[in-house]
Length: 440
Ligand code: ADP
Ligand code: ASP
Ligand code: MG
Image (cartoon, rainbow, N blue to C red; front, side, top):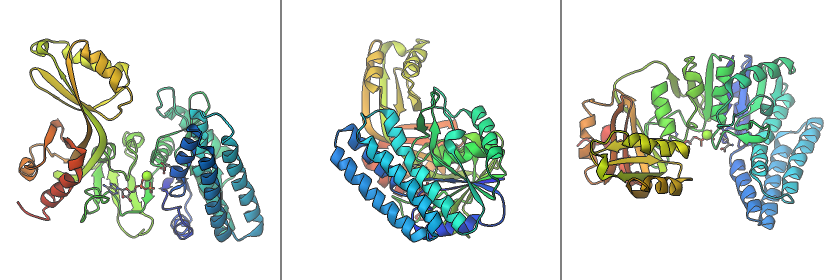
C-alpha cells in the first residue's frame, strides 16, 4: 500500500481539491494524509495567541472570518443536499468549539486543541467530497493512533499497533483519509508534530505499515537545489539519498518537515516528492541509492545562536568538552555546528529557550560570548568533502563574513555560519557559481 500526503495548498482551494481527487482516484487502495487548508493553521495560531493575550475581540473576529471562508468552500464544493447538511453540522460544531475556547483560560492544551481543528476540518470536508463524487473513502481518526511520548518523540510501536487496529475496525474503502500533524501526547491530551508535521505523519504511517512508497504532494516539482523563495533559477533534483534529504530537511529546506525521512530510512521505504499542480513532472525520489558526487543542493536555517566558550585552561585539559556538553544535555538543547581551537570552542543552537541558563552554567568555568541572528547555510551532496569543486567555496564567498565552518563532519554536508543579513546574498552567490550559472 502507498501513503500519499497532500499539503495545505493541495487542499487549499476547490480547484486543487479536484486535482487531488483525480490523482488519488486510480483504483488502488491507499492512505491519504491531509494538512489543513492553506492559511488555516496560521489563523488558528493567531486565534490561540489572541486568547493567550486576552484579546478576545480579535479572536472572535478571526474565528468568524475563518468560518465564512469554510462556509463558502462547502457551498461551492458540496452540492449534494444530504452530504452538505452533515458537513455544515460538523463545521458548525468545530466553530462552536473555537468560540467556546474564548471563554476558557489559556493553556497549552487549549492551544493544541485549537490548532488541531484545521486538519479535522480539511479531512472531514474532503472525505465528504469524495463520497459525493462516488469514490469509496473512509476517515481514520489520527487521534486514535498517532501519539508522542514524554520526550515528544513519536511512539512508533503504539502507532503501528493502533493504526492496524483502526484500519481493521474501519469500514473498508479504497481511500483511507487521515489527518496529518495532529497526535496525542503521553497523557492523552491533543498535541501535534510541530509546524509542517503532516509530512512526518505520512512517513510514520508509511513505516508502521511498511508502505511500498510514501508520496509527499505539494506545490512545487520536488526538492530544488536552492531555496526558491529567495533565489531565482533553482532546479528540481531528481534523486536524493536519505542522508542528503535528511540534511536538507533539517537545515531548512521548507518543503520537508525536519524529521520526514527518519521513520522510513531504516526500512528503505522510498519517499517521492510530487507537485499536485503538475503531476506529470518527475519530482524527487528519495531512496537509499547514492548518486553522483559533489554538491547537489543548498539550504539555510535561521534563528541560530552561536556561543563561543573560552577557557584558558582548555589547553590540554581533558574533560572540558564533556563539561560543556553536559550543560546542553541538562537543558535539552541540541547542538548543530561545533568547531574548536586550543583555547575556545564555538557551537551553535537553534533552540534558544534556555540560552540564559546555559550561559550562566558555562560562565562558572569559562568566558562566554553569544552572537544571535545567525544562519546556517548548508551545502549538501554526496562526497562533498574533497570534491574538486568544493575548493572554490572561499573564493565564491570572499566578501561574505563567515563566522564558522563545519567541514568533514560527514561526507554529505558542509555548513557555514553567517549573519542572517548575509543569507540571501550567500545563497545567490553559491547558486550562481556552484551550479555553474556563472563561472568564476
Ligand atoms: P505544503 O503545504 O504542501 O506542505 P510547504 O509550504 O510546507 O508545502 O513546502 C513547499 C514549499 O517549500 C515550496 O512552495 C517552496 O517555496 C518551499 N521550499 C523551500 N526550500 C525549498 C527547496 N529546496 N525545494 C523546494 N521547495 C522549497
Ligand atoms: N497544518 C500544519 C502546518 O501548517 C501541518 C502541515 O501543514 O504540515 O504547519
Ligand atoms: Mg509542509
